[in-house]
Every structure is written in structure tokens, then in C-alpha cells.
Image (tube, rainbow over the protein chains, first blue to last red):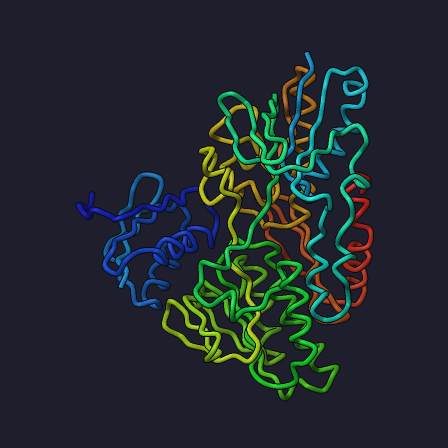
Amino acid sequence: MTDIEPDDTVDAKGATCPGPLMDLIGKIRSAESGDVIRLLSDNDQSLTDVPEWAEEAGNELIAVEELDDHNAFYVEKA
Amino acid sequence: MTEHVVIVGGGTGGTVLANDLADRLEPELDAGDVRITLVNDDHDHVYKPVWLYVPFGQRELDDGRRPLEDLVDDAVDLRIDRVSEINTESQQLESMEGNDVIEYDYLVLATGSTLESDQIPGLTEGGHNYYSESGATDLRDELLSFTEGELVLSVIGTPHMCPAAPLEFVFMADDWLRERGLRDDVDITYTYPIQRVHGNPHIAEWARPIMEERDIQVETFFNAESIDAEAETITSMEGTELDYDLLVTIPPHSGVDLIEEAGLGDDGWVDVDKHTLEAEAAENVYALGDTADTGVPNAGSVAHYQAGVVGQRLASEIRGRPATATYDGKTLCFIETGMDAASFVEFDYENPPSPAPPSQKLHWSKLAYNESYWLTARGLL
């Protein structure tokens, strides 16, 4: 378990691609610089989508937590 | 006791369902055991796919409008009103115009999508769209006098109505400009928010080579952050800035606020079981079409097929039988690839799309369907 305290969480479990990434982008859009957003996704495509987009957009993927039936991505807005 | 089915929204999903139920439950309606009410905030039913053709001068807005009372079975109570509040505990709706309470035994939400242009600074001033009536006519006026420069189409977020329409627009614009001898003087750029040109990877793989062949520039991972209408630039969250002379956008979409206020789901989309279309947070509530958060495209064919499923399930429940009909994700789409060619896809939750080779026959099939759509709305096709 990570001890990162997110400022907001997006629960995109059950959503098909590109839903989880778009949900994350939507939340980042309204977040403040430095905020940490946690994305919950059970879509394997998120394992590549989220890191690629975070790098492209200059945001930092600070942790990926593997949980029982989904992953939690922690992204800090630049 | 009379069972009251209330449908909110008179788009494709709500209208097809109202007519489906009127046919399916005819004996119960005749006996007074069932009442069906369709609530819509406009006298007209609007067929939005017509708007794609308006900017190219091929259709008029009136081609996509018909009075609901001409489309809906007489056995259905049509109420022109706007629902302002949903209370799923007491099974009641409050309305704006009637200023009274509508009680329901079964509620179906088919409230569709709304455009959220205000989410992006400068979008209202700088961007054109064909996702509204006024947008389509404004864009037509711009496009008809556009002879050179940078044409940018930017998809600002998903989900949005008709996921194929952005591809269709750039393919049609490319062909239309070539026919008019202007293509060499116009650069076309297409932007998409994720790392490919369409949300569905199979459609993206099919479309990308066509864009390359036609010299349509592509910017992926482009999430519009702001538009400077004066400088004619669009800037993405990822730090890319594009100049434009004509900017066509797919504005951000959401559902309607009263769904979130009722605790049925976020952003105006109802959380549903994607097979039964029953709301997860309330009893006796269904959602269909754009309103149902199923992950399938926001498309008329989806609403059409889902209406059949909800119709069967409601009829079973009203008759005291187990509801067994389920939605399998079925989606059909024609995709225009030019002014006289189109492709076609069919897919569901289990089977991915495989776009058909573009042909003139498929283009005419799409136009023929657009003309016969009114039979679909009536529940006949």
C-alpha cells in the first residue's frame, strides 16, 4: 500500500478504453498545479495509456499500485 | 391498479421506446392497466445525423425535425415539459411547466447529451461545430467562403455523440475541397485526445492510413486547453499550439444535471448494468442511449437497440414475468469516407468492428437510412 494522499480520486473501474484515461484527463483539467489525482482502473490498456499521456503532458506518474482487481495510478499535475 | 411508465426524453431512444411499448402493451393500454407518458422539452423530435451534411450544403435543418405528435403513437401521453427533479425514493418527478408532480411506477431516462463549450476558454468564440443546429448553419456559412488556409478539426474530449462523425467530417471536407479544386490551398489537421485517431483501436487502425493517403495531418494526445479566437490558435494541455483559419471542434459533452442531483451517476450519465440497462442506484429506473453509461458509442443505433431491450423488459415486469431480454452492446454505424463513398461497421461487447471497404453503395445506403429514419422513430424499422 502506498501512503500517498490524493487530492481527488477518479473511479473508472468497469470503463472501457479510452474511458479511464479520459476521466483522468477531465479531472486533471480542473485540478490545481501540484494536486495528486488517483485513477482507479481495471482496464489493462491503462497500464500503457496513463504513463504515455502523463509523459506527453508533462505530468508525473508518481506511483502505480497493484490491487486485487484493479490498479491505482497516482498522477501529479505539473 | 394502473401502472405508469414515464419516459423522459424524446430523442431516438425515448421515442422508439414509447412506440415499442405502445405496440407491445396494446392490450394493457386498451384495458387501462397501463399508462405511458413521454416527457420532452421540445415539440419536435430532432434527428441529429442530418447536421453533418448541413455545412456542406447537402441538407437543411428542417430535414432533421418532425413534430413528436406525428411520430408517437396516440396511446402515449405526450407531455411537453422539462423535468426539474427526480426523486427515486418516492418515485416522483417534478416538472417546470406543469408545476406539479409526476408519479411513476417505472422510469426510463433518455435525456441524451448536452454540449459544454464553456469548459474550454475561447471555444464559444473561436470554434465552430456541427453538433448543434446553430453550429451547423454557422459552420456552413464559414465553410462555403473558405478557400485557403488551415482547417483544424479538434475532438475535445470523449464521450461525444457519434464517435465516427469527426472522421467523417475530415474525410468529407477533404473530398469536397478536392472536387472544388481548393485542396492544394487548404491544410487539414485532425486532433484527438488519446494516442490514436479514434477511441476504438480497430477503427483507428483503419482510419489512420486513409488520413495519410489524403494528406490529413494528425495530432494525437491533443487535449484542448484554450483557444485564442483573436490570434486564431488552439493550445493543448500537452503544450502543442496549432494555428488555424477555420476551427471545427467537437465540444465537451455531458448529460443533464438532474441525473447527478438524483444520485444516479456522475456528469449526467446514469450508472447502469450494461446488459439489463437498469440503474444501479435506484429501483424501477432504466436508462438508455447516451444517458446510459455502458461504454458503447453515443449513437442512434445504440439507443434504438437498447429501446427494444428496455421495452421487452418493462413488458415482462408489468405482466409479472421474469425480464430476460438483455443488451449485447450491438452498434451499427455507417462512416462517410468522402462525398460519395462510405464504410460500415457492426460490433458488440464481444466482437470488435471490422470496417467494410468504402463504396458508393454504402454511401447511398447511409443516405437511404437517413431518409427512412422516421420509420425507426415510429417504431416500424
